[in-house]
Length: 215
Image (tube, rainbow, N blue to C red; front, top):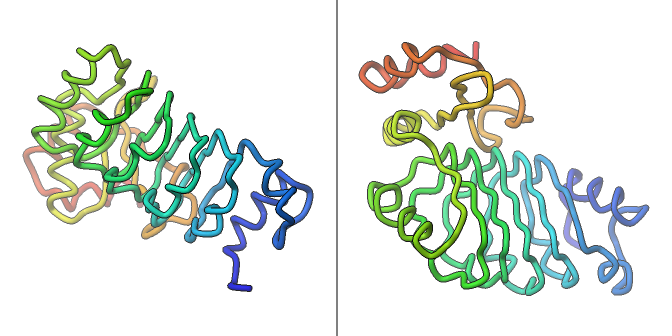
């Protein structure tokens, strides 16, 4: 048996009572799974009963590896290294939450007929995705949560500069996040709170300065 990511093994143990290997019946009993800091999601392909999958701080996240899971209607990918949505229409999604990732192209979301709501905040979206795809989703009756123009512009500028930091607004103000596992073992934590002046500075100044807020 191939080596299982230890964080995935722990997640499965919380759901089933023990880690891998699992019987067919045990896999079929898992309808919801929460995984954190997982680097290999491949072993999930045989969890055919999964309806709700929550991924936090995972890297990489290749959803095309999970297209065999035909029951997932709630998918959450947070603070992770999700970049490509090209096969996301394989899932009968009602709710798709993907805050603080590296997604640029939202067009695949238009091909999900079941989609009711989506959260795309804190992603370096392309100009077309931000100005055309989001309005089209809204016109289709989808509830879309997305970044303000300032946060979005900063996220785009930072990622285009290769900094790998995104900006978003929380209830307390603007924050920065380093999605994925390249810079942090737990990227869902330690998001520095910064002022609007700091945000404006990152937009018009040196993108590398974003890293100093994590010191």
